[in-house]
Image (cartoon, rainbow over all chains, first blue to last red; front, top):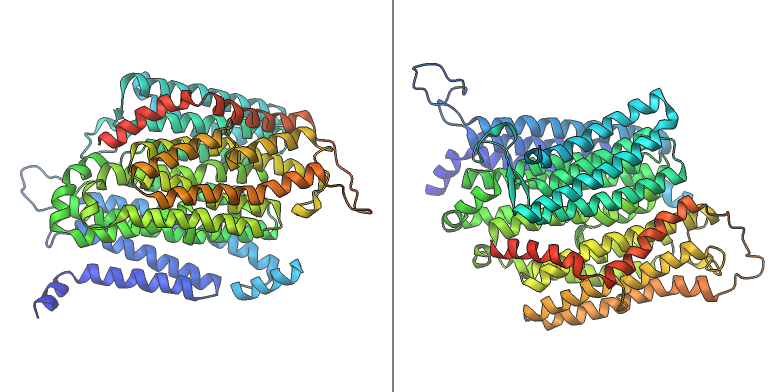
Amino acid sequence: MHIMVRLFANIHYFVSLCLFLIGFYTLLSNSNLIKKMIGLNIMDTAVFLFLVSVGYIKGGKAPIIKNGLDVVYVNPLPQALVLTGIVVSFSISVFAFALIIKLYTIYNSLDTVEIMKIRSKNDA
Amino acid sequence: MLKHLPVFLVLFQLITAIIIPLIHSLKKQLTPVVVLSGGLINILLSILCLYRALEAGPLFYYPGGWEAHLGIAIILDPIAGLMVTLFSVIFFIILCYIVGVGRDESWYYCLFFLLCASMSGIVMAFDIFNLFVFMEISLITSVALIAIKNTASAIDGAFKYLIINAIGSGCILLGIGMLYQITGFLNLGWIASMIDRALILYPHVLTGVLGLFVVGFGIKMAIFPLHVWLPDAYSAAPVPTSALLSSLVTKIYGIAFFRIIYIVFFPGISHVVPLGSILKIMAALAILLGSFFAITQVDLMRMLAYSSVAQIGYIVLGFSLFTGSGLKGAFLHIINYAFMKSTMFLAAGNIIRSTGRRDIKNLDGLGSKMPVTFTAFTIAALAMIGIPPLNGFFSKWYLVLGSLEANEPVLVVIIILSSLLNAAYYLPVIVRAYFYKPAAGEEFKVKVVEPKMYIPVVILGLSCILLGLGVNWPLKVINRSVTLLMGG
């Protein structure tokens, strides 16, 4: 019972860990290149959820200082990290999709297994 | 002015990267001049960095003037100075080679300088998130440097590189988040000051962080079970790219990883996780199996790529011994290896370019036809095996001493056995080239290699000998770095 209560209080960490593993599994188990990329994006999003929830305070306001008011602020640093992380993950996704387009024009397939077959046929 | 040196170095490399395509579009003939002078100024700035670091000890720089616990910290210590200098020298020689080959692509130079900037950023970062951002820049630029060849195998290798390294990045970012959660800081020094409390309160979270870091950095360093992306990428990439990536980039990740381990986790972590033994086992497996894979390869470039897997094992082994000599060996091997491997990749590039052959068994009798290139290749291969006057011997010597200091006689056996294995895949190439005659009907034409293409290779090969004879010079700087890391 005690464990359940603590788990419920920290549900966002648990969810982000689950999402991370789902993304990881999708990335490893699917042979379709687009699905691999979707898995990678889920993984990155899970990390962002984790980072944002690290800095979140219940009832906290946006960290903008107004004169004379004593308000509880959420921690702005993880949000800045997430912002940078989103930019990084966006650029990696775009680059990967550009490479996928190239691979598709070369092999006419998006499936890694088929691409491997075509490659080994070309080598032989 | 001198105060801003660390930032100025990275900024200079970034600005050069942007200027090169602009100049190329305005006046094509000027591009090589700008590239080479950029490389030279880069060397001068890096040597100045090293000099400052040795003279004034570790220097901290805070961009924007924010204090360490709020802002970003950049460190200029002997390790950073040494790595920046090494990187700029190898970088310049490889640039000379590219100019000699006559690649008319301004984007290639641009990406090279971007990669250089991100490498300097990684070794000087004292803030883990800053480190992460620089690692992502280097990931994207190195993938672009492979994909720029635009052949089917290069695109394939580049995609594999990108997606597997992106998993590593995700793991590292999650680890950084967890470390921030339990310590409240991103600055390595501040994390280290909080780590004792965290070790008592959250040992399981720290175990998770370490696991994520080992997997993430392990993928980026290509340590043995996580090396699968490396051979495809390096064998398909353009020759200068594989020379630079193999000789330096993966090792710089190693420096970043072990800087975190030494500053933050060492020695308290050993009560929670047997980190040293895990890394030692991974390194030993990498050394042995990397060499075994290399022996079975028929393609010259793939053989060199697998040999990289084996060599990163030595470096990880040296760092994970946690002794003075082991650390000396690791740093020395990073320096020596950079010269040996770039010699071999560039020489192999010359061989493939002038014969059009990649298979080892087709290289019979090449030694007399390409004497200069092959001499450089031979010197580097002998250095890699560890023949005494050459530089590879000294790094292995210190690694063996370190293993003895750490009371690990098995590792000594592994290091000596692996030298034998190195000989087993490098010597056949040399013997075939010098002593075999090409079979009847198999004689082939060799295009003449121009001096501007073999001079960079010769310079690198000679520095293998020079670094062997003058091993005391790098050791002076390395000793400072070692006391810095071991002193905590």
